[in-house]
Amino acid sequence: MNLSAAAHPGFLSPTGVEITFVLIGLATLGAALLTVTTRQLVHAALWLVVALGGLAVEYLLLTAEFIAWVQVLIYVGSVVVLLLFGLMLTKAPIGRSPDADSENRLVALGVALAAAAALVWVVVDAFRTTWVDLHGVAQGSSHATGESLFRHWVLPFEALSVLLLAALVGAIVLSRRDAGSPGGATTGAGSPADSATGKEQS
Amino acid sequence: MNDTLDVVLRLVAVLVVFLVFPLLVGQTEHKVMAHMQGRLGPMYAGGFHGWAQLVADGVKFAQKEDIVPADADRRVFQLAPAVALLPYLLVLIAIPVGPDGFVGQTLDAGLIFVLAVMGVGVLGSLMAGWASANKFSLLGGLRTAAQLMAYELPMLLTAASVAMAAGTLSLPGILDGYHWWWTPWQLVGGVVFFTAGLAELQRPPFDMPVADSEIIFGAYTEYTGLRFALFLLAEYAGIVVLCALTTVLFLGGWHGPWSGSAGWVWTLVKTALLAFVVIWLRVSYPRLREDQLQKLAWTVLIPLSLAQIALTGVVKVVIS
View 1 (cartoon, rainbow over the protein chains, first blue to last red):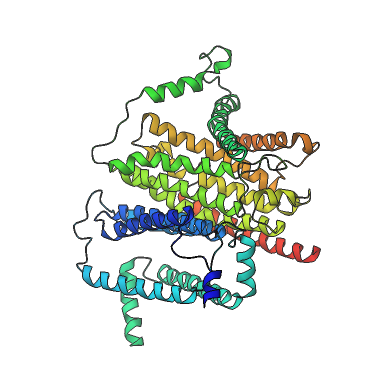
View 2: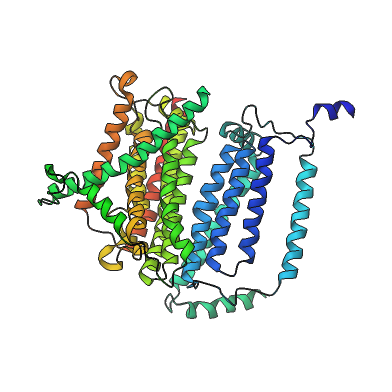
C-alpha cells in the first residue's frame, strides 16, 4: 500500500495546469447551467458553444489534442450550427420566450444530478489508478489515439459506425417517404399515413 | 527567455501576415476586377492607379457611425464580427510557410485544428443573421447554415484523403512527405476542397447567403462602419487561409526548385495564384441558386470526394 501510494502523485499538490483545469471546469459548468436556465432560446445555443469549447480546452489540458480539435469540429462546428439552423426556422424571438419553461425544473434537476453522480462514479471507479503525465510526452496525440482506437477498440468503433450508418439510411428513408407520397410533399398528407402505420404496429 | 522571444516573434509575424495579406487580396481584387470588366475602377486616390483607394475605404469605414438596431440583441450583434474574424487569425498560426519549422506553431493534429477553427468562423454570420432582427438577415443566416452543413462534409473528406496519403495529420508533416505525383493523384480532391472552401467563405459563385441584389448582403444588412469592415476583412482573411491551405495540402506548399533557400517564396506564389483564381471566378460565373448549391454539394462534390478517398486507399495499399 505504502509503495503504491508513494509511486502516485498526491492530490494535495496542485500545479498550474491543475488550477487552470479547475477554473476552466467551473467556467464550463457555469456556461452549461446558463444553457439550460436562460429564457432566450438562441442564447442557450450560444452558451452551449461556450460550454463545448470549455470542454475542448479541458481535453487540451489533459494533453488529448486530437480529441480536443475533433470536439470543436463536430460539436461547435456542426452540431451547434444545426441547432441554430433549427432555432432560426422556429422564428425564435429576440428577447425572452415566455413559454420556454416546461415547469419540470425539479424533476430535471433530479435527473441531472443522478446522471452526474452515475458518470462521476463510473469514471472515478474506472480510472482510479490511471495517471496522466501532463508535462511529458503527449499521451493523447493523434498517433496514440489512432493506435488505441484501431488496436484495442476496433469492435466498438465498427459497431458505432454501423449504428450511424443505420441512422443515416433511416433518415433518408423517412425523408423520401414523405416526398414520394401521392398526395404531395405536404406534412398534412404525411401525418395520417404516419398514424395509420402506428395503429397497424400497435 | 530565448523560447519566449521565439514564440512572441512567431506570433507577431502571424499577426502581421493576418493584417497585411487580406488587404493585399482586397486591393488585387479591385484592380483585377476593373481590368477584367474593361473599366477603370477608382483611379484618383493616391495618384498612381488609385493605389490609396483601400486606405481611403478604411478611413471611410472608421468614420461611420456605429449603429445597433433598436430591436437587435445588442451583445450578440456586437460580438458577431469578432467571432467571424478571429478564427482565421488562429488558423494562420498552424499553416507552414517554408521548410524546417517555418511555421507559427507545429500542431500534432494541425489539419483537424485548421478545419475545426475555420468552421467556428461561420458562427459569426449566424449570430449576425439572428441578432439583427431583420428578415433579410435571418434569410441570410439560414442560407449560411444550410450551405455550411452541405459543404463542410466534402471539405473534410478530401482533407482526410490527403491525411491518408501522408499518414499524418500534422501540416508540416504532410509537406515533408510530399512527392510531385501527389498533386495529380489528389487532383480531384484538390478541386473539391477548393470549391467547397469557396462555398464556405460564401464567395461568388456561391454567394447566395449574401446575395446583395436580392437579400441585401444577408446577415450583414444591418451592419455599418467598422463592424461591417470586420466582416469584409474576415472574407478576405478567409481567402488567404483557404488558398494557403489548398497550397499546403494539394500543391506541395514550399516544394519547388531551390526550395531549400526560397521555399517560402513558393508558398506565397502558389497562394497568390490561387487567390487570383478566386477573384477570377467572381467576375466569370453567375450566382448559383439555392437548390443548385445544395445539389452541387450533395450529388457532385460528396460522391467525388468519396471516390477520391477510395482511390487514395487503393494507391496507398498498392505502393506500401
